[in-house]
Image (cartoon, rainbow, N blue to C red; front, side, top):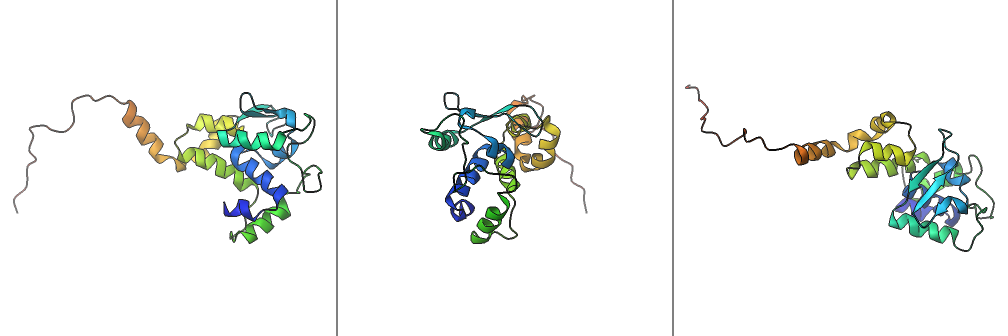
Length: 183
């Protein structure tokens, strides 16, 4: 929240979009109003790193944000624009991110890509399966997702096993008394 509040208004929209979608900077910068489908609550990434389109699911909060971003605009308009109304170009996020990090007193300063990791980490810590996180982030398979996020959800494994493994009736409460050695 401190980072979001430290951003200039146009850049703040980009940061909020990143935190609520997990999208890369280039994906957000390339989004057009027509890429947001309010009926199903998704944004379509037409040009991803993997060169395959994908759909990013939005939470209720994300849907409200994208409704605000797109209201009354043409389908061909970029969803996110700079303060001067222009499109976000390559590397235009670098300086505003450093400035916002400094204003928010985040040391060391963070890169824009950290926002993507924040999205994935938040999902992992809530116990979302790695396959779902991989799909949301556009990873080809779960290997990259597991490498970066699996360590954040150790309770997910334990909770899943405990919830699904049946009681066999062979543990605890037996009549066996442990033998104690004499000193």
